Every structure is written in structure tokens, then in C-alpha cells.
Figure 1 (cartoon, rainbow, N blue to C red):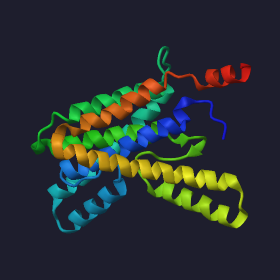
Figure 2 (spheres, rainbow, N blue to C red; figure 1 turned 180 degrees about the vertical axis):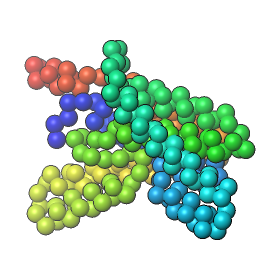
Figure 3 (cartoon, one colour; figure 1 turned 180 degrees about the horizontal axis):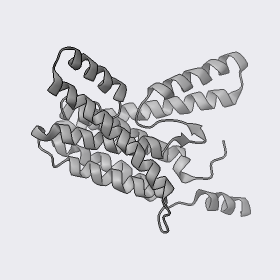
Figure 4 (cartoon, rainbow, N blue to C red; figure 1 turned 30 degrees about the vertical axis):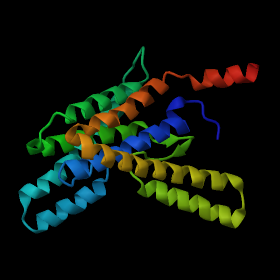
Length: 225
């Protein structure tokens, strides 16, 4: 797989998957058992609470879903704008990082706002980084990656073609990094509580800095040497 954009590199994908797992662990453990990324889970819990006529409880799951959707819309707007000094994906990372840092300063009685902002940031990320190594992949959820990874490994077992194995292993690597992000998140939550989300922003800052690398220039330089 020939990658010419650092925004689609495996290294960047790993950082984003770590942040994705961290955000979900943070919102679920620290912010009242609401998912930042897994909007299917939020929709399910919204429906359950709605059926039980627990309208206020239902709202804590519905509003993050709306925020996630708005995050996707913002990412598309950023893509459509003309940016001179920074890539639009870097702008998205700046916004996402700023949002996550701000979440740390909301008290527990403002969990709804904190979760909505976190979901908003997740929506930005999932729409901004849709491909890794030229493959469609998500860094804020696992179900699609699990399907694609298993599908490619199944094809490898039947065809023995190495590229299927490489693709399958890649998807499972992203899933592993997502899980490790949750593990890291849980560790820091126990010590830092609501401020733990600031650690997550470090992954995004690293991703932002990594995007200053012009991968195409690096490849051209290597060819010359």
C-alpha cells in the first residue's frame, strides 16, 4: 500500500486509535456511563430510557448523539474551506484538542455538557481521518474494523495471498490500540479523575505535530539516495 499523506499513515492511525479508546473510557467511567464514540450504545440506552418514560435520563444519551453528528458536519465544513498555512486536518486536530482540554474543567454536575463536547470531538475525528494506509478505517470505534479485519483474514486463509493478511493484521492493530487507549485512560482516571482527559490531548498534539512531515518529500528523498 503506497501512502503519500502522513494523515493516512499507520503511525498517525495508532495515535488516533489510542485517543479514541481513551475518550470512550473517560466518558463512560468518569462521566456517568455515557459513550463518547459508541453512538449505537447511546441510541440503545436512549431508547430503553424512553420506553421507561425516563425522559431526563434519555436526554443524557440523545444529546451526545446530536453533538457527534454536529462534529461530523464541522469536519466537512473545515474540508471545504481554504487554509493557507495549515492542512484542514490539522485545524480539526486543534479544535478537537481544545475541546478535550476544556472538558477537564467541567464539574460532575455538568457531565451532560462534558459528554456532548467529547462526542462532538469524536465526530470531528471520525470524519476527518477516514482512511489509514489507503484503507477505510475508524479510530473512534471498532465494529467496522472488526468486520474488515476478519473478512481479510478469512480471505487470506482461503487464498494464501499475503496482502489479505497484511490488511487483516492492520485492522486488528487499530483495534488493539483502541483497547490500549481505554487501558491507559482507565489508569489515569483513577489518579486524575476529570482531568485525565488532558492526557488524551497529548496523543492529538503528537498527531498534529506529525502532520508537519511531508511524507511525499521523504519518499522522494529516499528514492534519490
